[in-house]
Length: 105
Image (cartoon, rainbow, N blue to C red; front, top):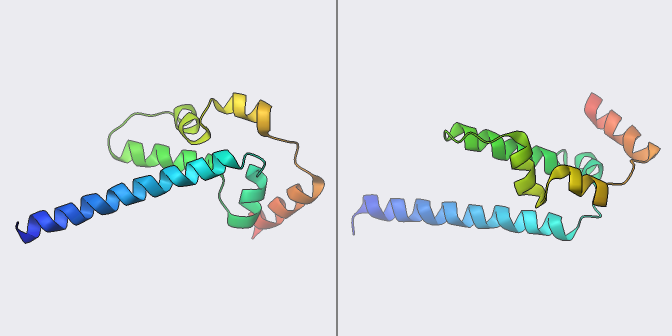
């Protein structure tokens, strides 16, 4: 086996691990639907919608034409409108204030 093919195998293995890790993150979020997007934004400055946008951007960078709603369905595991009506609660005044503070910083 050549060094080039070994490097390629390591690169492929790393890519597979990264993909599996992303899938686990999506599964984790799916198992914790009670964690609202605004909470994720307030704590970590990203949410499921951000993941959807990043997914779409990476797909498009590789020449795949995927729209935002399709990317959201991949991240949410269902159409966003369905997820929103089933699991999204109204943001509290405290959550909105914290979000506003983070957005302005």
